Picture (cartoon, rainbow, N blue to C red):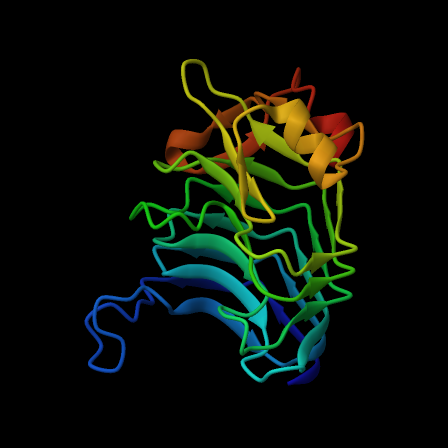
Length: 220
């Protein structure tokens, strides 16, 4: 796919679990880009799929390139919310793409360690900014178990701080539970924050921010 727009869709209950080709694996994307270029994925709502949105290339040394994932609401997916990069080192990856202003809420419901944002093999020069991430049962915000992560920028993201609950960030195969330490190793900008964004009613999946939310000036 080239030069396309995927916009204003509601996608739900898409899973490979139990499929004879996949067995017990949760690999199906609600929206899936394989080797695409110049594609915008915008204002979609995706829930109860294996992966909310995935943009990668299954072919070695090939890339999903200039994929813009913008203003989507992605919640309660089984493995992860958004995934970029190849699932192993024999695949391609994701380059020159933008993940911005998405609500990524309580994915990884099966506890598969995909977290809210999954950075896999060969992710280069991508911008990840102004997203609000709320951890699921695994407590993982970002899962990056590969060291082939180069030139990616994390800017003005908000990681939802919840009273009595830990946060976990995995960066280049190292796990961090201390947010300032994660910011340092990932080179996240100074405006990336660990705070309560103050949703009006996230229990009913109303992700409008309250008037006094300090997240507004960061992500809007």
